[in-house]
Image (cartoon, rainbow, N blue to C red; front, side, top):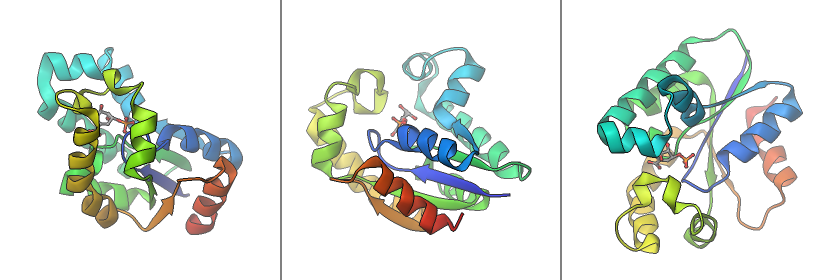
Length: 171
Ligand code: S3P
């Protein structure tokens, strides 16, 4: 049984590509953010507002821990952009299966996030471009550390991205 884990910065299209990939492979699709929101019965901005980032990060560790322990079914898993920041989470992601980093340029991410920053607490406070740049700087090496391979997404058709992921995972 296989699992493909998609990681990357906010706005890199992890969920969109993940859903399409799962459909293509006939696998199930799991999104850690959606799972957390369902279980908590509240949206991520609300969780951050009421209980803070550390609480959310603990939920992420619990979630990826559970997923890494379930070896029974094939699945494409898309993880929140900050989940790979914790070392323990990177280990759990690797335990799940093949980890692919969907890498977008700062320019592309900015253009996608400009209308969507409201729903992402990590982008609040300060100028959007600066927030993206500094978080990307902090996270780039962690994304690389967690991943088996990198797929560049700038200028590519969705099918090209999916084909690359399939080739990497060998499924
Ligand atoms: C976060 C990314 C979000 C979500 C939360 C925190 C981050 O997921 O988990 O708002 O720290 O980068 P997406 O990457 O799906 O937007």
